[in-house]
Structure formats: structure tokens, C-alpha cells
Length: 587
Image (cartoon, rainbow, N blue to C red; front, side):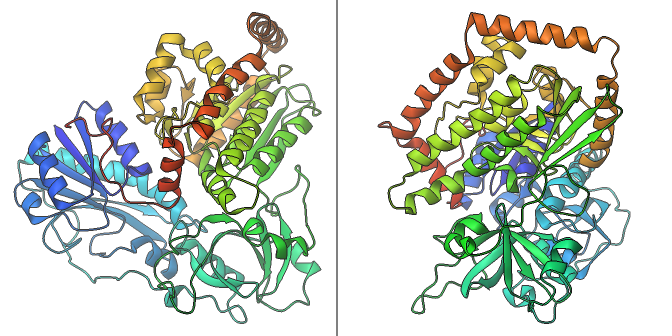
């Protein structure tokens, strides 16, 4: 079939569908939903059998849906309507939810249901996490069912297996429904409110008497709460990594990220829309002066369950066949200079542990997405700093992390991708000896979409050693996402197993333990060390790094501002003016 993906942005769900549908032999092109006239033109040019809309923020024009079958993917069960489907489901505490594929008509989300699939709502999951994992996986199944019915049933959808219902329109959830009442709300209630607003729009609140939106919340351990048991609910108590600790009625929570409101009394920011000039950043960065006066509460890298931090290390298996497991759960996969330095230091400490295999597990949502563009953009507001300088510091810090992995030659290193990876995050994974992923993972192994960035992380060393020089050059020019199966076929990923992050993690540990107990592990490590010495003699890693950074210096400081423009548009979510040509094949 000829399928046109019409989408507000080429997000994780759109990318997953793009890869799956192409793998099934469909001809797929993409048009970003910019204007009705642009959509009409795309349909005339591409002549699709079906327009598939995985992520829209406005209606498809009647001039399109009246002439071509348009199927909309809605993250809700049949009968649910409105733009805040997941927000309301989490707020209500629904145990089950689903994804519906319905035909576009005049009323939004009111067309005939072609297919739907249910999923259990993971306890404690944020809206973004549910969307990236359960919604995306379920949407793929529902879309494939809908398309199968189209091909076998002509232009009429098959009889649906549940009653057709228009249901009630649920409006955009207002901030009034998200408001936190610190003196009376329980920890669970506050976490639920922040979880339902994760990603966007956040929960409007105050910190240090300044308005901001709260994101990325985690419960504090009983030991932490006991230290501040006499403090009033709402009090800001301590700091850890990016987060601030805030007392609740019956406990405390860590607030990892905030977006400060820049409203003024004369020009208030609308309560339901993000501030136009503010960035989502680590809470301790936004309120750096206030945070400096708070006590720091660090935790050991190797610790028991229950005490939150971005980094955690564990060990499994007996002596002589031991697996080290390093989690780095960085919000949205972005790695700031500070976070890179913490991960580098963790890797240096891990070297002192007597293990045979080290698993770099990344985060549950993302393995890594490379340098922290929001953090870099914020550097422009700091006296004596600049986005170019911050970019160079950040990429050097990322390089330091990759170098630690590449030169860790006394054990096998495994990159276990529980979530998606993009740009420098992909090449951080390729620094490991072995790369594993599960079926739902999407990789974007390129940099050029961010204003023609050249990239570093030693990719000019790690990528050709896996797939060869010619294939590396071709891959870096493509700018297209790869599914896990695509990545396996192109040798970026060694193997793919499991459908989702949870079963993948369990199987990854089993495989890592088996790898640590391999009878010829000593010979494998000797071969690895000899190869690294041979590679270093042929061309030192320092030379690869210097060449990459020379190219990136042009991106950051050169006459072409493409990177700075692309970064600015990305972090402020500026609307697209056109669809990139590598996506819009019909153009």
C-alpha cells in the first residue's frame, strides 16, 4: 500500500510506525501537519491509499478526509475523545486503557472505529513513559489490524468487536485539575498529578516563591523522610543531582526538572500553555542560588532499592562469573556536561570492581540521546558563557564517557538498550563490545538533523569497525530512524530480543550472566586487548577525537549557524515551516 503519515512532529510513535510499515513492504512517506493547503498538496502528489495520522493537534481538513481514507491514532479506548486522553486516564487511576484507530470525520475523534487494542496501565508510570512504551507498542498492533481490514474489506471497516460509541468529549486538562495542595495532598496524589502532566504541560506550582512547572518527580526513601519529619509540607529541604527534595503530607518527593514561568504582572502567561521563553532544566540549575544553601544528600552508586538517583550500580552472579549492571536514568535521555562527568566518574569506579561483564543499561525510557540541548541553550543567558562554549564542553564530556567504555578492556562491555537512542547516544552504545535491544527500540544513528552536526563520541572509530567505511558514510547521510530489526540487519545491533523493556531487561541479565560464565572468556578478553592495542598503534583514539572535534568546532563557532538555529527551534518546539525532504519522499 501507499501510506502517507500525517503528523504534527516525527515523534517516537511516528518513527516506530514508519519503520514497521516500511519493513512490511508498504511505500511510506511523511508530511508534517503544517497547514491544510500543504496537506492537500501532499495527498495530490503522493496519492496514498490511506492517510495515517499517528500524532495530530488539529483536525484533518475535509478536503482530504472526504476524498481519501484517513485513519487517526487516538491514545484512548473507543468512546474517549479529546486532547488529554492519557492525562485524564492517569488522573482517574484507570487500570486499563487502550489505543483506537478511527476514521477522520468532521468531529474530532468521532469517526468509525477501525481497530482498537487495550493495554494495562503500568502502576506509577508517567504520561510520557506510557506513551513511549505501552501506547506505541499497542498503536502498532492496532494500526496493523486496521490496515489489514482495509486491504481485505475494501473501503468499509470490518465489524468492530465492541459497541460503537461517540462518548464524551474530555477537554484539554486545565491546570486547576492538576493543582497540588501541599498541606493536604498525599505523596501518591502529588506523584500522580505530576505523572499525568509529564512531558507537557507540567504542573504549575511555585518553588522559592517563584512560579514554575514541575516534572520528573520521584518518591523519597523512608530514611530521607525521617531526617526531615518535623518540616512543613511544601518545604524545600535538600538537593541531589538535578533534583530538589520537597516535603509532602506523608513523605517527600524529589523534583528533578522544572520550567520556570517568565510571566510578568502586566503580561501573565496563560495557565494552560508553557511559558514561551523558558526551558525545562534541572531544578538545581534553575534555582542554583537557592539550591546552594540547601544540604546535599548524595547516595552511594551501589545501594539497595528505594533510594532514587540518576545513577545506580549493581552486581549479579558469583565471583569469577560476575556481571556489573550500571543504570543511568537521565531525564529524556539528554546528557548534560554535569551528567556526563558523573557517568565518567562512575565508569572509573566500576573499573575497580572485579567483574567479567559490565552492562551499560542506560535508562528505561531512553538509552541516551547525546548532548543536552536545553542545557546548552540556557548557557546563552549566563554572563561570560555562550551556547558554542557550552556545546564544546558538553561534547568533550560525552567523549570522555565513550573513551572510558572503549578502553575498558579487562571485561566484556554490553550496551543494553531498554529505550530509544539517538545521535551521540547511539554512538555511546557502539563504544561497547556488544549491543542488545528489544523489538520496540528505535535508533537514530546520525547527527545531521540537528543543523548538519558532524558528531563525535569516537563514531569515526566505532562505526566503521562494525559496518565498514562505505556503509558508515551511507548511514550517516540517511537521517532516517532504524527499528531494532533494521539495526540488527545492518550490524549496528548484535541481537534483538523481547517485546518491551521489562522482559528485555530480565533476558539481558540472563544473557550477561551466561556471557560472564563463558568457558573461553579469558581468551576472548586477550583477543579484545590485542585488537585495541593494534587499533591504537594504527591510529590513536586521540587522533579520531581531534579530527571529530575540529569538524564540530566549525558547527559551533563557524560561519554557518545551522546548528544553533536547529537547536533553538528544537528546544522551544518552534512549528515546522516545511517537511524535511528525507522524510517527504513525495517531494
